[in-house]
Length: 488
Image (cartoon, rainbow, N blue to C red):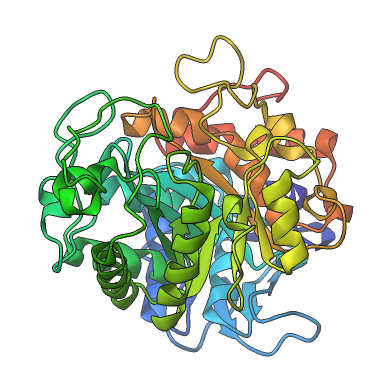
């Protein structure tokens, strides 16, 4: 069965169908690609379900083949692509490997859902004829995974990278530290991981990433055109760090490890010089491991830090970020603090009317990353019957996550760089829990961030999304069957 081109999620900018035309992948087909990774990535998708050999070549694709071509495509930005399917060939063109990778994600959605199987299925393996021209609305299209409340190992994070990159998200924000755990080894402060990483919410062994494992995650994500953004939350959400190094407290006493889920009770001691030595050394080590442009310093829910101390802390810490060559990223509570050039604040407010902190960020000219809690917080329940999740920001159905416009969420004309969907893990302990709360809402957020507003329509989206249920089942993703979606 030929999959209609309009089933693609996120919705492409332009689809020009060729009625009556379809490309059929043959057993003798080859894949032409400019790099070994791109060709192998596509071949690894297609070989298991088709049983075809699909050798990868760098040039010479002909009739019956698939070609990924680096080329200047008029009218498209660097990360855009053009996909053309004729009866004889599928060609994806882009100026960059990133654009070609995005085109590959569209191609796999144009093939029958059984392309996601890992065992051989009967064909035919057809692609509808026509042309797709596509590019993203926003440059930052992210998802956040909280590995501090509950720790998730390298393979789980890699799986999450695979899931988000299939929907053209290009940022993975890792929440690496909180009251419940510190998850990244730091040579200058080894007890952070050894002691601070030894527990998690609800108890249990916790865990942490070695620097080599973190570098492995950075490289794995980068190969899939996903940038990793590390977050080390401060000056609050630091109980794990204080347990490991009590000299970071004002009284020098180590608090016990914390396995609960309350917030706002911990703080670094703003008046001590050791605090800034700690921050400087930690940020320098993490920046050296992270090729992406951002270091996220948190800044939220610092209820135990007096307001004057909070501002003083940020006055001293933000330049430590810029000294590493990175851009400051923080939750929108950092808005009232004096900005540094390029600062970006992540808005997680629950209402369209911004709070005082967000208004300060807008007045300062900060760039905004939108993560409104009552729209895109993936840790919220879908409904009262959802077995895991929270509900302090309300219940978030797929329609709630989809049916808003980032350009009009906040008044004025703030510099919105994109959208990010956070998954906090107070109640999330297994990969199956991640799947349940992520799908089907993640593709809705992906379309918010990628597709032009003119191409977005709830009624039409729900039909396109329905066709992805069988794909997720074949990928082993246990998703929530939102009753508003006409699942196929």
